[in-house]
Image (cartoon, rainbow, N blue to C red; front, side, top):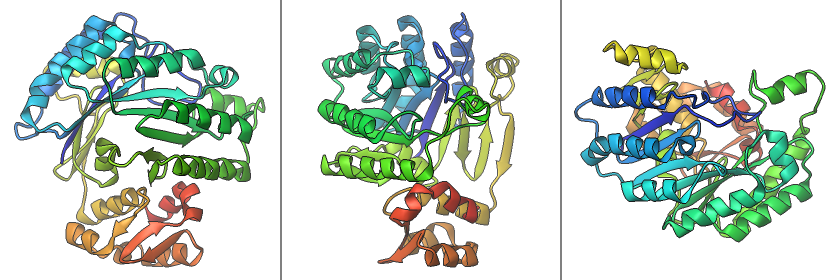
Length: 371
């Protein structure tokens, strides 16, 4: 099933750990929306999405009128398909009841709330604009607006945060009882303020043992609370797994619109520039906004499907992989897969290849061997 991703490039303030493309609002919303509408008119006529995901940036940083315009220009594309999941990201501190009502009325049926932590000190360290109380209030606001499918983002592996701090965050999120929880380990991305602070010796990353201990705590705590761990960083109550993200992890087809958005459609991968100015200028001139395009050879596509599929806890079906790609996965990286199985990072069991518990935490290193 194909998906549509919309990248809204606006944020009130960039968080210290974030490397996603975003810019201040600064009066640019009308130009962006006009350009986005032009790009949506360029979509293939046979593209009919089953999932829609509005991300960013912070979509709810826009004023209500602009948010209403955004969902209105999406409606013709949504009407083409059988959209079963329509997600919008929101951040506490930017969400209001009016905005929630606009999204609900448009047909958005899943919200993703960026909480990250309930600790005032941690939120300040990360550069978040909201308080713990605002996070709880925003969650309740979504419930009051009628949303019955909510994801909450949490972060662990944060310098200065102990196991006890994480236990408190997990307890707070369990009290909210969202349908889905995305729990991510902090990553020091190149060029971000936190990485610059680390490189200058002003802070230290948690060591691997501490990060692993916190990851195990997250898995055990959420599992005991009835959440199914179905992807490296994602936990859901039964039936509430993110269909749009499962599309990515199954190497499915999707089209991304907006600056910095990427697509995978009919064997071609392409993306838009990480520049609102370049994106808008191209569309205003009647050109495609694509900044790159590449055709994936069958073996490269199969290798990508292998890596993305291993993100899921149930791994890859050997038979299904062969039927879908035409390759036996062992033919792609035979020596590497044998070695990763030998050292306990991968396991083959019941006709499936999957990451072991040991491999889950160092999955990026495992995937680097399979590229």
